[in-house]
Length: 293
Image (cartoon, rainbow, N blue to C red):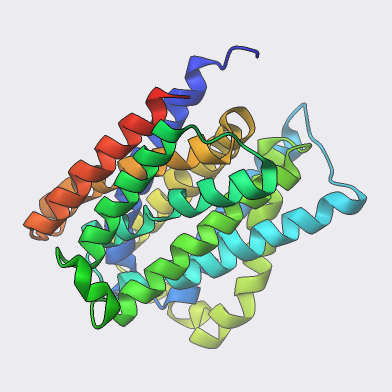
């Protein structure tokens, strides 16, 4: 087996940090911008930047034939559906809580990657994933795991659970685009996502109201575009190619710790006992799962 460059791991950690900040920035944006409009602006700007970089890159690769179908599916899951659920959920759910809910997706990703792509899952990794998922569920249920069977989930929680599921689909579908470069895959993912979001954003009035957004909202949108989309999507795709869907998705579990701290510092969100417990379990599960890979 060829040695995996250390920079790949560095990029996955930075991606987790950037995405941790995205929940805080997303809360600011969601308070002023309708969900489909926020998603459209995100992928319009990110798509334009990525297309310019892709167009002038020496390794520019135009998709052909059957390569278009996976890109269309990536745009539908990673851009259209994920952001619909993500920004809707952030309208009512705190940044820290939202981040921990999203970390349920590595468990689903690992199981499906094992079934579909035959990726290995040693017992220690499986145990680590279960511990991390358990930590996330502890936060979802606000410390009462038994309440999952009746009234634990709010509408915002359900939106975020759906966001986790669509991101799982996106992670796995990246395998189908493995013959394309990460830059090509994310560029056309953004373009397709932008096209899908356009009619819904127009219905929300994005072309009329975007001049009314505050500088704080635009600053958060720029952060989401540059750090959380252009850089992070390319790096995450590289992680999937080098590490596999399971291992790349495990780094997502590092997000809650970043988000909880930033949410407390920037948004004055309370750090409750259930969130702290969930973050500890999630980080422990990530460490355990990565010990055996």
